[in-house]
Amino acid sequence: MADLPPAPDDRFKAEMPVIPGVAEGSKPPSSSTAPLKIVGGLVGVLVVVVAAGTLLSHSRRKAAQPTDSSTQVEVPAPDLGPPPQTPPAMRGIATIDAMAKPWSSTTFEYRNALSGERFPSLLLRLPAGSPGQPSGYWAFSLKAPYGNCQLELVSDIDRLKNEYGYKAARHPMIGNPCSLSVFDPTKMTNLPGNVWVRGATVQGSDLRPPLGIEVKIEGKDISR
Image (cartoon, rainbow, N blue to C red; front, side, top):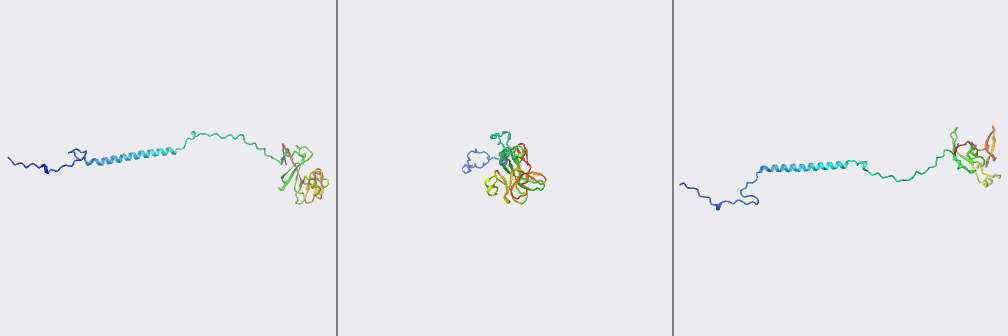
């Protein structure tokens, strides 16, 4: 009978360490599955990033879209009532109503159609004559026919008597402060050539009365 090798002594056998949760005798997992798990994790992260970017892009486009004007609430304008009535523009020198009182007057600028010269003028309501007729007014240039003096309407009777020395004054007159000549708006005078003009000279050395300006009546407007 052949000799058998002696049985190994269990006292000298190394004990395997015990790992919690690992059954005794089980083999460690194969290292070939680790790269697959890593790739799967990266793919999952990539899917999450793409989905988040898509949602963010959609939300930005919605925020940039213009608001539908049809959904805006219209606020009614406040009722301010009818606009204020403005008086019609005056097309002439004055109105009949404004010149209704005798000896009423207003100044205006007259332009000579031949020379183009402009000079101050006066419209005077005469005490006689109808306010609706041109004969009820006298318009004339305030520039003296000769010289550079400016004529004036003198309504103060005492001034006519004291400053101008015209003692016979009974109503307003036209005066030339340079020559102290006085012209009566109620009187006519005849110039050479048989031309009748208003404003006869009742005192002074002026050669002729003020230069008259023709006026006309258009409705209630007095125009030249």
